[in-house]
Image 1: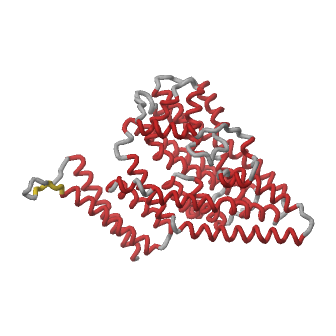
Image 2: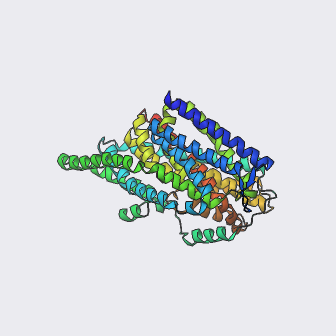
Image 3: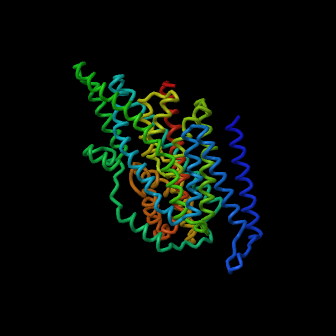
Length: 463
């Protein structure tokens, strides 16, 4: 009852703040007064800011009473937005909190995947199941990502968001684009699946290569005849995975600070008026993302009889982390832990979820098809259906296996636009709102992969 009253009080104060902000913004009522020395103050400005921070204080109290990490993460997001709005210069330094968090997360991924996969494969000695899950996963990933590409094309062709848009990149976007392009490397979809040095794969955060190494290691361990030696390694792998899950819980205590820092930096960097002519692109993307969830993921969930409430409870934390940090990797350890708690076997979670991070990027593939056509529209070029289909075929290949590459979606976008004979510098302007769009597409990537894990587990009769 106490928590409910706190929530009502918080929402009431936020509602009053929104009303006052709307009145002041639309009617230009400032309620200014002078102190007699030539300085004037705006009561409306100070009152709305005061109410906003009162609401945030109540929200902190609500999170404290709730004692849930999800509540703290959501509150931290709003605090970060407020800090980024009120203190932009200071907020630009807050990125260090999210960077620290992401570094710690990256230390978890390799040992966690190794431990869970080795135990899942060698502990049950069911090597055939690995092959079955691999084939089923690839089939599922290809079908769903193809649908994502089509929905992206349909959305941008319906809204025609790029028609009449003037894509002029600012100096900051040009500088950022050149930095990303400078670290572009050749990418071989097949070759990059296999590790040449596991230490290098871990250092470069190549998740798929770590998965392949762990699977081969698990198969090799399952073939060991000496039960004493096999048991010793299995015990080590099982202990390692258990320790890394506890390690994850410790690191997750920093999640609210990291989320707040990431949001503060994003708001301070983007500014309020940065969207401008790109507002229609952002709106089209989010509408397409919601359409994909409603038209594709929900029906899939109904077909496999997904327990929606339990599933939503399980993915709330990893999804909120993914949205705020715009990083799928940040959500991976917590997503694995929550899906295991939901009842999905560790061996399925450890295999399907990280593999999906390379092959099942629903949000990213949808964005790439949408953004490519947007640039063509803004360039005054009307792509034929044949050209759009050809572009989709290219994206089906180029968007695979790049989860660990910084700025991968931008690099693919530039490459795709170039292959269509368009000016690749047109893509630079999109970087102005890339952080905002990245939050949405990353969130869909995580949701899609969590659902894929349940689908494959159901397909295998494991749930």
